[in-house]
View 1: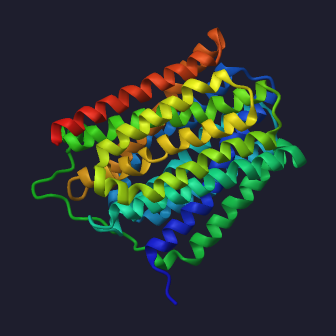
View 2: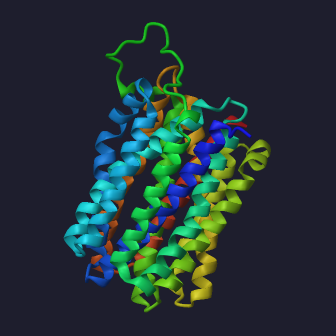
View 3: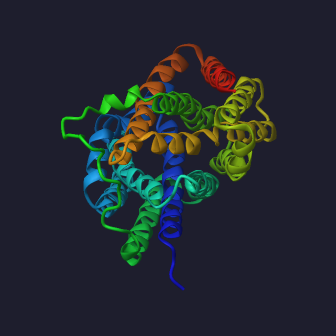
Length: 386
């Protein structure tokens, strides 16, 4: 039986996402155990986003013109090598270097796979396919942290990085085995009159693109601060890596549930209304985190946040691809990724400095405020268009 290209792409991304989600947990916990404070861990996350933020749009233009399989091969291979560094040379310095390279190389893979998903879909199937992509990410959000938490407690941090390298090697083997399922180049022709001098920021004139990017930025605030400071908060409470992994994994379970529900709910409510409700829901979870030290309650709050934040990413992917003019799909996806990685640069460092100065509770509450603002913006847009 011949495997459909879209099924192969979704399976490939799901495997690699297990390693990517596990990486965030092991980097944070290793840094904390090495004596890093909130600001230093924020810098680690910022380094993860700096090169993708600066180079994502250029990579998107390459994706529009050349074979995306090259981006996938190069991204996964280099990412695996970045994971080897903390295994060979454990320490904060190696974590800084590894984070910088991991951010850029994973971006190449993510860009290429999102491009393929959009190109292999139709307007009628696009939301479903991007939701399926996000479901795979949610499953990885469960498996990655749980697997890495167990690995840290039983094999220590350096060998956990080696495990991530092995998963990246498995991804390369899968990609090579199914390389012929992916077309060399699959994108629409440029619009009549389009020239090479076209400016990327012209895309911001499109209302749908602006809505997608702003929504994505708000979602990334919640995503980044949860993944960065939730492990730090729990480590400060004395939780084991395994316990932290289970609590972080609960976020993935919730995101999986909400992403399965996206197609029927958006068909009934519309995109903006679903996002407005979801962001408000996530804000409630962030408000109560600093008020408890009970693992079961933190697991419940993690679940609530996952329900709220989990739907934002696939919906913004769909909006960004649909807003793209002919021949500029890769560039549009890259703009969304640039916003995401820009959030990885500025949010952790800014909030890390704040957390170091006045503690983590205000960080969680400011995050809730940002999510409420995004909820209000989308609610107002819903009223204008209803």
